[in-house]
Image: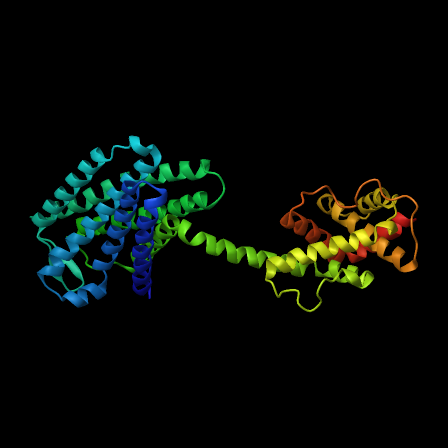
Amino acid sequence: MIETLAYYLCVVGFAGFGYKLIEARRSQPVRTMWFLAGFGICIATGIVVLTPAMEALIGPGPVFEWVVTLAGDELKLGAIGFAVAFTQAVWRGEGARPAPHALVTGATMVLLGVCFALSEPERVGDETVFSPGTLPFALGDKVLFLFYSLVSFGLLFAVFVRSAWHAEPGPLRAGLWLLVVGVGAATAWTFWDVGDVVELARTARIGAREDLPSSVLAAATIGFVTAGATLSAWSPAVSSVIGRVRAYRAYRRIEPLWTALRTAVPGIALDPGRELAGGAEFALYRRVIEIRDGHLALRAHFDPDLPARAEAAARRAGVREAEVAATVEAVTLAAAIEAGRAGKRFAREPDHPAEPDTEADVATEAAWLVQVSRAWRRHDAVVERVKAGASG
């Protein structure tokens, strides 16, 4: 299951990083995005070549024991090198100088290959064993990989956290935090090898396959990094879906308020029975307009002295401070509906609207009406007590 998930995430990773390369021609320096694509390709390929399915495809023997195993570690180092280069390019722009770190990465990869070759690994079942004479080289291989990886991931983690902390809210910030989580998963994935080093030093043998926790961390790494790096590709679609869901929820939440007003002023319903024909956002827009039309139609029935009395009565009734304004709105609206039903008008209109001064924005209006509707629905008993207290 985890292996299959890793495969799917690798495919998504290849597609996502390929998309970023195409997108880079219009929005980002090509060199910067090549670093990002190099990271994604290396880490995804590194995961693929070390899976049991790859071993089954190649078959047991020196090819898998030597070439594929070494290639997996070298690809991981290459991925880390590309990640650091990408971070430098983003952080410092044109002033970035990735060459020094590239030299360190290249030297580390060469030393890793030399240590691996001198360790002369031998595959026995599901374990790789080493002779006493070659064990120091095997330990050097593992320690070198751990040291380089953890230092580089520490640098990446610090840079991404700092960038995410200071970024403006939006897709960029969300993508950076996803990268932070991905780097954290990669650090944990690498640090998991500490147990292998201890086992290797103690028994001169090590497991030849990735265990379940390591596979989970590998899948989490490629998933979060791919999501963070390609957020600009899919965030608009996700934001659109979230926007529709939020609009539909708001549409349903203000329904009790709208129903009461439609009953009192039937003419506010623009096209009954086709509320959602144009989508949730349009339906919410219509419902907000209809509620405001009902409010205006009842304008002459609002008691100008009621809001102050209702506010005092709401506090006496124990309404939370954050809900007082919405409760006052619900009270004054309910009283206006009753006054309209009774044909009672007030000579003087209220000095100010019963609702707070909000921006002429559908989302803001809807958020306010949701509060009023919640006070109307959840606190109907409180509204009745407040009405009674305000009228008395």
